[in-house]
Image (tube, rainbow, N blue to C red; front, top):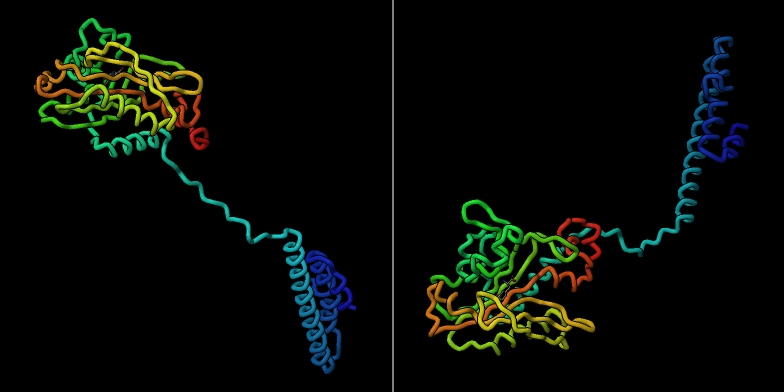
Length: 316
Ligand code: DAH
Protein backbone atom coordinates (compact mmCIF):
# COMPACT_ATOMS: atom_id res chain seq x y z
CA UNK A 1 0.00 0.00 0.00
CA UNK A 2 2.76 2.40 0.94
CA UNK A 3 4.67 1.32 -2.16
CA UNK A 4 1.81 2.26 -4.49
CA UNK A 5 1.27 5.64 -2.86
CA UNK A 6 4.97 6.43 -3.20
CA UNK A 7 5.14 5.48 -6.88
CA UNK A 8 2.04 7.51 -7.63
CA UNK A 9 3.50 10.72 -6.18
CA UNK A 10 4.23 12.90 -9.22
CA UNK A 11 6.18 15.71 -7.52
CA UNK A 12 8.65 16.22 -4.71
CA UNK A 13 5.92 18.06 -2.82
CA UNK A 14 3.40 15.21 -3.21
CA UNK A 15 6.08 12.73 -2.17
CA UNK A 16 6.80 14.68 1.01
CA UNK A 17 3.10 14.53 1.87
CA UNK A 18 2.90 10.79 1.21
CA UNK A 19 5.93 10.20 3.45
CA UNK A 20 4.37 12.28 6.23
CA UNK A 21 1.24 10.11 5.99
CA UNK A 22 3.33 7.11 7.09
CA UNK A 23 6.33 8.40 8.97
CA UNK A 24 5.26 11.85 10.18
CA UNK A 25 4.41 12.54 13.80
CA UNK A 26 0.76 11.58 13.15
CA UNK A 27 1.64 9.00 10.51
CA UNK A 28 0.35 5.44 10.56
CA UNK A 29 3.77 3.82 11.08
CA UNK A 30 4.51 6.21 13.91
CA UNK A 31 1.17 5.11 15.39
CA UNK A 32 2.34 1.50 15.26
CA UNK A 33 5.54 2.41 17.10
CA UNK A 34 3.58 4.17 19.82
CA UNK A 35 1.28 1.10 20.16
CA UNK A 36 4.28 -1.06 21.10
CA UNK A 37 3.94 0.05 24.70
CA UNK A 38 0.62 -1.76 25.03
CA UNK A 39 2.04 -5.12 23.94
CA UNK A 40 3.20 -7.99 26.02
CA UNK A 41 6.88 -7.42 26.86
CA UNK A 42 7.51 -10.86 25.31
CA UNK A 43 6.15 -9.77 21.90
CA UNK A 44 7.44 -6.23 22.08
CA UNK A 45 11.00 -6.82 20.81
CA UNK A 46 10.03 -8.82 17.75
CA UNK A 47 7.18 -6.49 16.85
CA UNK A 48 9.48 -3.49 17.30
CA UNK A 49 11.97 -4.93 14.86
CA UNK A 50 9.24 -5.50 12.26
CA UNK A 51 7.93 -1.96 12.50
CA UNK A 52 11.43 -0.47 12.30
CA UNK A 53 12.19 -2.60 9.26
CA UNK A 54 8.95 -1.36 7.66
CA UNK A 55 9.89 2.18 8.47
CA UNK A 56 13.29 1.72 6.84
CA UNK A 57 11.78 0.20 3.67
CA UNK A 58 9.45 3.16 3.32
CA UNK A 59 12.36 5.58 3.77
CA UNK A 60 14.34 3.74 1.07
CA UNK A 61 11.47 3.80 -1.39
CA UNK A 62 10.76 7.47 -0.76
CA UNK A 63 14.45 8.26 -1.40
CA UNK A 64 14.47 6.19 -4.59
CA UNK A 65 11.31 7.88 -5.83
CA UNK A 66 12.72 11.28 -4.97
CA UNK A 67 15.80 10.68 -7.06
CA UNK A 68 13.69 9.36 -9.97
CA UNK A 69 11.58 12.50 -9.87
CA UNK A 70 14.66 14.73 -9.84
CA UNK A 71 16.23 12.90 -12.80
CA UNK A 72 13.01 13.23 -14.77
CA UNK A 73 12.84 16.94 -13.96
CA UNK A 74 16.39 17.54 -15.18
CA UNK A 75 15.88 15.54 -18.35
CA UNK A 76 12.78 17.50 -19.26
CA UNK A 77 14.46 20.85 -18.46
CA UNK A 78 17.38 19.93 -20.72
CA UNK A 79 15.26 18.81 -23.63
CA UNK A 80 12.91 21.79 -23.45
CA UNK A 81 15.78 24.32 -23.32
CA UNK A 82 17.57 22.82 -26.32
CA UNK A 83 20.97 24.08 -25.22
CA UNK A 84 23.13 24.78 -28.30
CA UNK A 85 26.67 24.25 -27.09
CA UNK A 86 28.08 25.50 -30.42
CA UNK A 87 26.82 29.08 -29.79
CA UNK A 88 29.64 31.59 -29.13
CA UNK A 89 29.99 32.62 -25.51
CA UNK A 90 29.21 36.09 -24.18
CA UNK A 91 32.22 38.30 -24.98
CA UNK A 92 33.48 40.48 -22.11
CA UNK A 93 33.21 44.20 -22.93
CA UNK A 94 36.35 45.52 -24.60
CA UNK A 95 37.58 49.10 -24.74
CA UNK A 96 39.03 50.83 -27.79
CA UNK A 97 40.99 53.94 -28.62
CA UNK A 98 39.19 57.27 -28.76
CA UNK A 99 38.39 58.34 -32.36
CA UNK A 100 40.71 61.33 -31.96
CA UNK A 101 43.56 59.09 -30.83
CA UNK A 102 42.97 56.84 -33.83
CA UNK A 103 43.10 59.79 -36.24
CA UNK A 104 46.11 61.37 -34.57
CA UNK A 105 48.03 58.09 -34.60
CA UNK A 106 47.23 57.68 -38.24
CA UNK A 107 48.58 61.18 -38.95
CA UNK A 108 51.73 60.57 -36.91
CA UNK A 109 52.38 57.35 -38.80
CA UNK A 110 51.92 59.03 -42.16
CA UNK A 111 54.47 61.74 -41.34
CA UNK A 112 56.85 59.32 -39.70
CA UNK A 113 57.00 57.66 -43.12
CA UNK A 114 58.15 60.99 -44.61
CA UNK A 115 60.85 61.42 -41.98
CA UNK A 116 59.07 63.95 -39.73
CA UNK A 117 59.67 63.79 -35.97
CA UNK A 118 57.10 64.82 -33.38
CA UNK A 119 57.66 68.01 -31.37
CA UNK A 120 55.56 69.28 -28.48
CA UNK A 121 54.92 72.54 -26.68
CA UNK A 122 52.93 73.65 -23.63
CA UNK A 123 49.18 74.33 -23.71
CA UNK A 124 49.73 77.42 -21.57
CA UNK A 125 52.02 79.35 -23.88
CA UNK A 126 53.81 82.67 -23.58
CA UNK A 127 52.40 85.53 -25.61
CA UNK A 128 55.85 85.72 -27.16
CA UNK A 129 55.71 82.21 -28.64
CA UNK A 130 52.01 82.30 -29.48
CA UNK A 131 52.01 85.78 -31.10
CA UNK A 132 55.13 87.93 -31.18
CA UNK A 133 57.69 85.50 -32.56
CA UNK A 134 55.16 84.54 -35.22
CA UNK A 135 54.88 88.22 -36.16
CA UNK A 136 51.25 88.47 -35.05
CA UNK A 137 50.85 92.21 -34.42
CA UNK A 138 49.32 93.77 -31.33
CA UNK A 139 46.18 94.81 -33.22
CA UNK A 140 45.57 91.34 -34.67
CA UNK A 141 42.08 89.97 -33.73
CA UNK A 142 43.66 86.89 -32.13
CA UNK A 143 45.14 89.24 -29.55
CA UNK A 144 41.65 90.34 -28.51
CA UNK A 145 40.12 89.07 -25.26
CA UNK A 146 37.08 88.09 -27.33
CA UNK A 147 39.07 85.50 -29.24
CA UNK A 148 41.75 84.15 -26.94
CA UNK A 149 41.90 82.85 -23.37
CA UNK A 150 44.52 84.93 -21.59
CA UNK A 151 46.25 83.75 -18.44
CA UNK A 152 47.95 86.10 -15.98
CA UNK A 153 51.61 86.92 -16.40
CA UNK A 154 51.94 87.27 -20.17
CA UNK A 155 50.54 83.80 -20.91
CA UNK A 156 47.72 82.56 -23.10
CA UNK A 157 46.12 79.19 -23.80
CA UNK A 158 47.75 78.58 -27.15
CA UNK A 159 45.38 79.54 -29.95
CA UNK A 160 47.15 77.34 -32.50
CA UNK A 161 50.01 74.83 -32.71
CA UNK A 162 52.22 77.30 -34.61
CA UNK A 163 54.14 78.39 -31.46
CA UNK A 164 55.70 74.92 -31.49
CA UNK A 165 57.49 76.08 -34.66
CA UNK A 166 59.25 78.73 -32.59
CA UNK A 167 60.17 76.31 -29.80
CA UNK A 168 61.43 73.65 -32.21
CA UNK A 169 63.43 76.01 -34.44
CA UNK A 170 65.08 78.12 -31.76
CA UNK A 171 68.63 76.92 -31.25
CA UNK A 172 68.33 74.18 -33.82
CA UNK A 173 70.39 73.94 -36.98
CA UNK A 174 68.56 73.06 -40.24
CA UNK A 175 67.78 70.78 -41.96
CA UNK A 176 64.87 69.42 -39.88
CA UNK A 177 61.25 68.46 -40.31
CA UNK A 178 58.64 68.23 -37.56
CA UNK A 179 54.97 67.74 -36.90
CA UNK A 180 53.29 69.06 -33.77
CA UNK A 181 49.84 67.69 -32.98
CA UNK A 182 48.08 68.99 -29.88
CA UNK A 183 45.30 70.83 -28.10
CA UNK A 184 44.46 74.43 -28.96
CA UNK A 185 42.01 76.94 -27.45
CA UNK A 186 39.80 79.74 -28.68
CA UNK A 187 36.75 81.59 -27.41
CA UNK A 188 34.37 79.82 -29.74
CA UNK A 189 31.37 77.52 -29.45
CA UNK A 190 28.98 75.81 -31.87
CA UNK A 191 28.16 72.51 -33.58
CA UNK A 192 31.56 72.44 -35.28
CA UNK A 193 33.43 74.70 -32.82
CA UNK A 194 34.64 73.90 -29.37
CA UNK A 195 36.68 76.16 -27.06
CA UNK A 196 39.22 73.32 -26.94
CA UNK A 197 40.07 71.62 -30.21
CA UNK A 198 43.03 69.93 -31.87
CA UNK A 199 45.42 71.00 -34.58
CA UNK A 200 48.36 69.45 -36.28
CA UNK A 201 51.24 71.63 -37.39
CA UNK A 202 53.94 70.57 -39.82
CA UNK A 203 57.09 72.32 -40.97
CA UNK A 204 60.34 71.76 -42.78
CA UNK A 205 63.44 73.96 -42.86
CA UNK A 206 66.41 73.30 -45.16
CA UNK A 207 68.20 75.02 -48.07
CA UNK A 208 66.20 73.79 -51.06
CA UNK A 209 62.51 73.48 -50.12
CA UNK A 210 59.90 75.14 -52.35
CA UNK A 211 56.16 75.74 -52.41
CA UNK A 212 55.91 72.80 -54.83
CA UNK A 213 57.29 70.53 -52.10
CA UNK A 214 54.63 71.87 -49.74
CA UNK A 215 51.91 71.05 -52.25
CA UNK A 216 53.34 67.59 -52.81
CA UNK A 217 53.42 66.76 -49.10
CA UNK A 218 49.91 68.09 -48.48
CA UNK A 219 48.54 66.25 -51.49
CA UNK A 220 50.02 62.97 -50.26
CA UNK A 221 48.60 63.71 -46.80
CA UNK A 222 45.12 64.40 -48.20
CA UNK A 223 45.23 61.21 -50.26
CA UNK A 224 46.18 59.26 -47.18
CA UNK A 225 43.30 60.73 -45.16
CA UNK A 226 40.53 60.97 -47.73
CA UNK A 227 41.41 58.70 -50.64
CA UNK A 228 43.41 58.58 -53.85
CA UNK A 229 41.03 60.66 -55.95
CA UNK A 230 40.98 63.65 -53.59
CA UNK A 231 41.81 67.05 -55.12
CA UNK A 232 43.40 70.01 -53.34
CA UNK A 233 42.70 73.69 -53.86
CA UNK A 234 45.02 76.47 -52.69
CA UNK A 235 43.61 79.97 -52.22
CA UNK A 236 45.97 82.91 -51.77
CA UNK A 237 45.69 84.17 -48.21
CA UNK A 238 47.55 86.09 -45.53
CA UNK A 239 49.21 84.74 -42.41
CA UNK A 240 51.74 86.90 -40.55
CA UNK A 241 54.13 83.96 -40.20
CA UNK A 242 54.22 82.76 -43.82
CA UNK A 243 54.95 84.43 -47.15
CA UNK A 244 53.49 83.54 -49.56
CA UNK A 245 50.51 82.04 -47.72
CA UNK A 246 47.53 80.01 -48.78
CA UNK A 247 44.41 78.48 -47.37
CA UNK A 248 43.70 75.03 -48.68
CA UNK A 249 40.56 72.99 -49.26
CA UNK A 250 40.13 69.40 -50.31
CA UNK A 251 37.40 68.03 -52.55
CA UNK A 252 34.60 66.37 -50.59
CA UNK A 253 31.45 64.95 -52.10
CA UNK A 254 30.29 67.65 -54.56
CA UNK A 255 32.17 70.56 -53.06
CA UNK A 256 35.20 71.74 -51.14
CA UNK A 257 36.02 71.49 -47.48
CA UNK A 258 38.24 74.02 -45.77
CA UNK A 259 41.24 72.21 -44.38
CA UNK A 260 43.81 74.65 -43.00
CA UNK A 261 46.53 77.17 -43.74
CA UNK A 262 50.01 76.90 -45.13
CA UNK A 263 52.84 78.81 -46.71
CA UNK A 264 56.58 79.40 -46.90
CA UNK A 265 57.89 80.28 -43.43
CA UNK A 266 58.39 84.05 -43.23
CA UNK A 267 62.10 85.02 -43.18
CA UNK A 268 61.35 87.16 -40.12
CA UNK A 269 60.14 84.09 -38.22
CA UNK A 270 63.31 82.20 -39.13
CA UNK A 271 65.40 85.15 -37.92
CA UNK A 272 63.39 85.30 -34.66
CA UNK A 273 64.59 81.73 -34.07
CA UNK A 274 68.20 82.52 -34.93
CA UNK A 275 68.13 80.86 -38.36
CA UNK A 276 69.84 82.62 -41.27
CA UNK A 277 66.99 83.35 -43.70
CA UNK A 278 69.37 84.04 -46.62
CA UNK A 279 70.66 80.51 -46.39
CA UNK A 280 67.59 78.56 -45.27
CA UNK A 281 63.92 78.46 -46.08
CA UNK A 282 61.04 76.13 -45.34
CA UNK A 283 57.32 75.58 -45.42
CA UNK A 284 54.69 75.21 -42.72
CA UNK A 285 51.09 74.14 -42.53
CA UNK A 286 48.45 73.72 -39.85
CA UNK A 287 45.00 72.17 -39.82
CA UNK A 288 42.25 70.92 -37.53
CA UNK A 289 42.30 67.31 -36.40
CA UNK A 290 38.76 67.10 -34.98
CA UNK A 291 37.26 67.83 -38.38
CA UNK A 292 39.08 64.83 -39.83
CA UNK A 293 37.74 62.56 -37.07
CA UNK A 294 34.21 63.91 -37.67
CA UNK A 295 34.48 63.17 -41.39
CA UNK A 296 35.99 59.75 -40.93
CA UNK A 297 33.47 58.57 -38.36
CA UNK A 298 30.46 60.50 -39.64
CA UNK A 299 29.97 62.57 -36.47
CA UNK A 300 27.55 65.49 -36.90
CA UNK A 301 28.80 67.40 -33.87
CA UNK A 302 32.31 68.12 -32.59
CA UNK A 303 31.16 67.84 -28.96
CA UNK A 304 30.54 64.11 -29.37
CA UNK A 305 34.32 63.86 -29.32
CA UNK A 306 34.64 65.58 -25.96
CA UNK A 307 31.57 64.90 -23.81
CA UNK A 308 32.76 61.42 -22.82
CA UNK A 309 29.47 59.67 -23.63
CA UNK A 310 30.66 56.05 -23.96
CA UNK A 311 27.45 54.81 -25.52
CA UNK A 312 27.94 57.17 -28.44
CA UNK A 313 31.68 56.60 -28.71
CA UNK A 314 31.17 52.84 -28.78
CA UNK A 315 29.17 53.22 -31.98
CA UNK A 316 32.14 54.81 -33.67
N1 DAH B 1 48.09 78.72 -37.18
C1 DAH B 1 47.08 78.90 -38.19
C2 DAH B 1 45.71 78.91 -37.55
O1 DAH B 1 45.55 78.36 -36.51
C3 DAH B 1 47.11 77.82 -39.22
C4 DAH B 1 48.36 77.89 -40.03
C5 DAH B 1 48.38 78.68 -41.18
C6 DAH B 1 49.46 77.19 -39.69
C7 DAH B 1 49.51 78.73 -41.97
C8 DAH B 1 50.62 77.25 -40.47
C9 DAH B 1 50.62 78.05 -41.62
O2 DAH B 1 51.73 76.58 -40.17
O3 DAH B 1 51.75 78.06 -42.39
O4 DAH B 1 44.80 79.42 -38.09
